[in-house]
Each structure stands twice: as structure tokens, then as C-alpha cells.
Amino acid sequence: EAKKRGRNSYEFYTNTLDRQSLKKLKMESELRTALDRGELFLVYQPVHNLCTGQLQGAEALIRWNSRHFGLVSPADFIPLAEETGLIIPIGEWVIRTACRQLNIWQTLGQPIQSISVNLSISQFYQHNLAGMIESILQETGVHPSHVTCEITESMTMDTDNVAAVLHSLKSLGVSISIDDFGTGYSSLSYLQKLPIDTLKIDQSFVRDIAVNESAEKIATTIILMAHHLGLHVVAEGVETAEQLQILRDYRCNAAQGYLLGRPVPPDEFFPKNFPVSL
Ligand code: C2E
Ligand code: MG
Ligand code: MG
Ligand code: MG
Image (tube, rainbow, N blue to C red; front, side, top):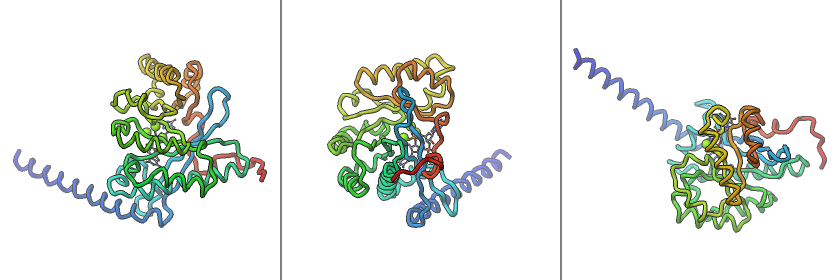
């Protein structure tokens, strides 16, 4: 009896695996042509300066509206894009689209200074990332000081290559931000070696900042450390007024989160009736 059940559950297991790898194959082939079909788009989440209360910028976040799978989360297709190398054309498209959008907003006189884009580790191995970004800046008329490249803390462990590319990005004049700070399991020594401008406190610490003393201590210590190092600090995932107040009290420079604004398509980012001044 046990043997029979064992065999059944084995078959069930392999069937499940097959279905998963088939889905992955299908997703890969769909992703290959998603850009050409216009299925990828960017949504923008506001970043507010906590000192002035004003909007300072937006983070561009990718979305995939697949004809086959429907809306796919970046958490599900960015790893696949990295595995297949598709992140190279997709990543370039993200930077170009975000820069074009910033230029449109600035031309319309909308009150926004900067745009942030997320970079993958594979992009640090592509030929001449800084040159590619430089061309996009020229083509779109965006000033380099208005662009921030977000990298995750784990990418800093790949020190030699990442340091060289980050220095070339810094010479272009774009800013560098460490995303999901505090979750990367990496030593802090990179903070001395790499040309970093901003730390983004991971949303896991922000989520518990008002209810859990150790999360509050971690978040506020990150703010103090960033300021001692002369870095800016942005809090991610702010959902309540109480979280925002604590971050303000500790002089966190900026914040992002559902409380201040969800990621939205560009035509919803500013109120429709905003006076257009060309
Ligand atoms: P991230 O860069 O850390 O982005 C923050 C994520 O938190 C976004 O998820 C955002 O929608 C979500 N978020 C913002 N505010 C709140 C909040 O108040 N509460 C909660 N619970 N969540 C909030 P999203 O858009 O699903 O993106 C997930 C991750 O996918 C991003 O994390 C980033 O690592 C990656 N990603 C997104 N777009 C791109 C891209 O263009 N290129 C690359 N390489 N990665 C991207
Ligand atoms: Mg980010
Ligand atoms: Mg993050
Ligand atoms: Mg994240």
C-alpha cells in the first residue's frame, strides 16, 4: 500500500514538474517577442522629499501584459529575462522609455526632477553600459543628474566588475542608489569603495517600523549611518501616516509607498487637469 502511494506521489511530482517547465518554456518564448508586440510597459511611483513634502521624482517599474499569461509580475519575469539574456534589450528599453517620459513631463512643465530605473547584474556585464546610457541621455535630452540607477545590495558583492562600471556611470553624471538596503547579506565595506549616492531602506523594515522595536532601530540606524556617510536615504513601502511620521522624525530624506502613491501608468501620474504650459 505504502509502495503504491509512493509511486503515485512520484508520478504526481514529475507531472507537476513537467507542467512547470513547460510553462517556463512558453513564458520564455512569449517574453522573446513581448517587446516587439508592445506588451511591456512602465508604471511610475512617486518619490516625495520628506523635508519639503514635494514630489521629487519617480521610480520606473516594468510591467508585462502578456497575451498568453495576462499581467505578469516583474518578480516572475525579470529572473527569466536575466537567465535568457533578454534583460539586455529589455533593460535598454526601460532606460530609454523612462528618459523619454521624464523629458515629456519636463517639457510640459510638470513638477518632477528625476527618474529612477532598476538595473540587473547582467547589464553590468554588457558591453559599454555607460556608453549606451550616454546615447539615450543625448537622444532624449535628459540631463544625467536627473537619472538614478538602482542596484541591489547583493550586486555589490561582485566588487571588481561592478565597481568599474559604477565609476563609469558616475563619470557620466548619473546617481547610484542601493535598493532593498539591509537585505543583501553583504559586508558594508562596499560603502567605502563604491560611488554611491543613496540608500533605499528595504520595505521589510519600514513595514514594521511602528510596531516592532527592532525594525524601528534598524531603520533609524540606517538613516543615521547614511547621513554620517554623507548619503541620501529613501524609505520604500511606506503605507501608513505613522510610519511616515517616524521617518520624518529621523530626518529620512525621501519616501515612496502606497500612502504617497501607487505605481501608475504615465497618463495617470499627474492629475488630468494640470495646466499644460509649453
Ligand atoms: P523594487 O525596485 O524594490 O521596487 C519596489 C517594489 O515595491 C515594487 O514592486 C513596488 O510596486 C512595490 N511597492 C511600492 N510601494 C509599496 C508599498 O507601499 N507596499 C508594498 N507592499 N509594496 C510597494 P514591483 O513593481 O512588483 O517590482 C518588484 C521588483 O522587480 C522591483 O523591486 C525590482 O527589483 C524589479 N523590477 C521592477 N522593474 C524593473 C526593471 O525595469 N528592471 C529590473 N532589472 N528590475 C525591475
Ligand atoms: Mg527599485
Ligand atoms: Mg526596493
Ligand atoms: Mg525589491
